[in-house]
Amino acid sequence: MSTETAPIDPVKLDRLAEVAVKVGLNLQEGQDLLLTAPIAAAPLVRRIAVHAYEAGAGVVTPLLSDDQVTLARFAHARDESFDRAAGWLYEGMAQAFDANTARLGVVGDNPMLLSNEDPERVSRASKAQSEAYKPARERITGFDINWNLVAWPGTEWAQLVFPDLPEGAAVAKLADAIFAASRVEDADAVANWQAHNARLRARTDWLNAQRFAALHFTGPGTDLRVGLADGHEWMGGASLAKNGVVCNPNIPSEEVFTTPDAARVEGHVRATKPLSYQGTLIEDIAVRFESGQIVEASASRGEAVLHKVLDSDEGARRLGEVALVPHSSPISQSGLLFYNTLFDENAACHIALGQCYSKCFEGGDTLSREEIAARGGNESMIHIDWMIGSAEIDIDGVAGDGSRVPVFRKGEWV
Image 1 (cartoon, helix red, strand yellow):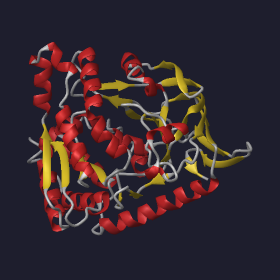
Image 2 (spheres, one colour):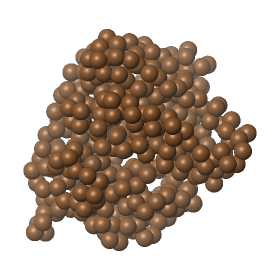
Image 3 (cartoon, helix red, strand yellow):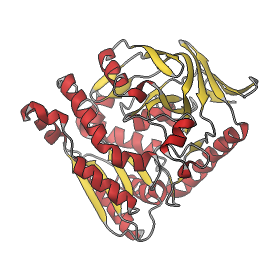
């Protein structure tokens, strides 16, 4: 059974498309939209196009990818191909963003697509892609424009999450899990998101009022002090982009997040969930930080890939994000491992190696790269989230004078 004919609720699929356009992007009248998606996600892409044009979009331009084309490269391309990427495409995307084009990405590819390919070639191709993508990535991490990610239940992804079910049943079950996590089960999904955003805003307002100098995470295998960047700002849910549009970058979204000080992270931490990265499942990650940098790293599975990630560039061993998510989040309570960061990061508190979000600074839209670095912001060609939260994790906010305020106890907001 193909994903075209899988039993996916068409009403909820349409609600997801509507939420992506009206809440995720908050697409403005006359604004163009650049949309990327797996070719199998065409049913969702078509509904997004309908809602985008109904909202007054200028031009909707879809760019579709295909797993078989990706695998053809690894099967038939010359070796030098793996050091190349379509830089012209990403330069064009950057030009589109500079012209106020909105960005929407539909995820749903097979997370294990490259698991049987030569890891050296996978690493080279990833590095070339990351370097080529930099012009477009900088506009996104800098929140220059309104952008959003949503998900489609790809067949291979569904069978990975639900390996004991027949193909059609797995796709239907993953679709239902996506709809639940994306808060589109009720008829007025847009209103549900407005209420959810208000709750997340209350969390960020409280954290911003505290002006913590650091967060201290403690629990099994974890004793980690994460210094927070000078002038950091907490964000979550709806955020104001530099083009003046309030958008929800991630659907689903259960996190509030900010920028750590790349030089002030100390201690050790153990992952509480596996990290699915480019076809490799990295399990039981454990690392130790000194002066902000990872100096020891291990994993029970995928350790070689983890070390390749850490060697990506100078900023890859430092943190670009710290995020708080309660253990009671709907995604956590589902008990599912999605093998997809868009979902798994919303199941637990997490940290991200690599690039920081410049928007997570007071006045971040006016800061230069040098000013962001001076405040502690990290720069890298990667941004990889991995989960460190659970029902056993406590978090204290540490003030500049060393005094402490309980933030989380046993995985929940105090």
